[in-house]
Image (cartoon, rainbow, N blue to C red):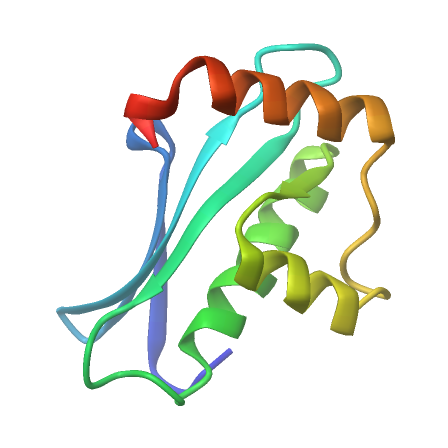
Length: 115
């Protein structure tokens, strides 16, 4: 993790947030897949202006995969950054089953205003 980062999983609002001290520096916006098996679905990864290039986005994605692993559920990285990170870190980012990825895309398409 980037030095000094604190993560907060706000599951109710679908946000994994990163803070440096009390300063908000980045977020993964996500949802929990309704279909079985449940999965965590990353939709957007954003790092605040002035904080880019410090490893914050990568730390967020790594934490996101860690949360999913602890819960025993897959991650579907629909966010382009998270998908590229997963490709670069296959040992930390197992590929979800195709039916889980398909269900995540359908849920996202059905509720675009939420994401």
